Image 1 (cartoon, rainbow, N blue to C red):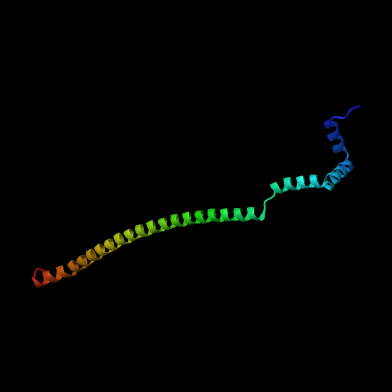
Image 2 (image 1 turned 180 degrees about the vertical axis):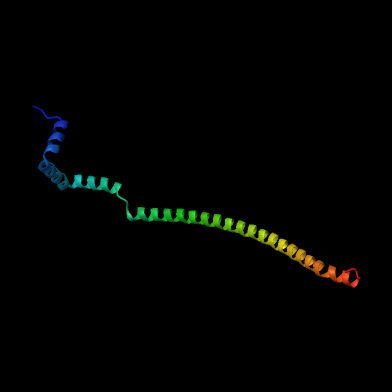
Length: 121
């Protein structure tokens, strides 16, 4: 009876001890161990990869922070301009109201005085 590759795989799935022995045999072979190490290293990030990623993330974050800072500064400047305009309008309104109050007080006080001086009151 001949075994197929599928049969061999199934037998290894069923026998944990046989799997361990096969792994030990494969790892003990220098060429196989080197091939496995190279395959694993291709999948592992190196310190250089991490440094490069950190620099990319730092550059990205710096760019985002700069963009947010510019946006906030523009909004603050717009608000300051708007507030200055509103304060100027309010100051003009207060001045006009103050002048109206003074004119009203003056006319209220001066009218009876003038009429008294003229002898009409």
